[in-house]
Image 1 (cartoon, rainbow, N blue to C red):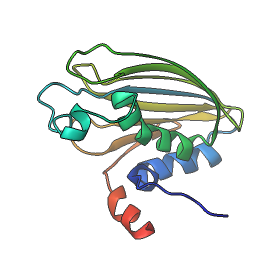
Image 2: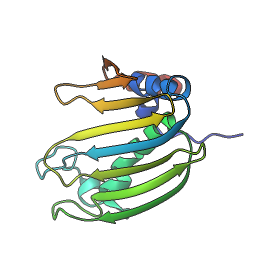
Image 3: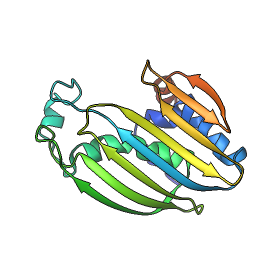
Length: 171
């Protein structure tokens, strides 16, 4: 078999790998996943102000550009997705293409879930929760510095970012 791999550091983030392990071993049978992303891309955002983002050559705008990271995280933590149904919209004039998405997904392992994503917002929020028959995993992007707060069955720890080095070593 040949595996096609896109440079995606989320697969190597310690907090995400720990969350994935907890979903498999510490919460019983997972059955529900919810993801909320609020990623402000204001007009002065340095990541927005690149030629390839201001004038993209693809359809879908920031949803296609940025949600690839969340997709990699969902696959790592929850598993392979079976079906997806979404609605997208464009709500900020300064953002090219779609900037908001609401959806429902079912995973091959039986988990059902919902996600809301927007880049046309003012305040950041990044949360993933997976509920199982014996507990839950709650992953939250820290707002007071780089990293994540990871809560597994009511026990919380803070982890820093660090997936880039492991990603490069994997190539």
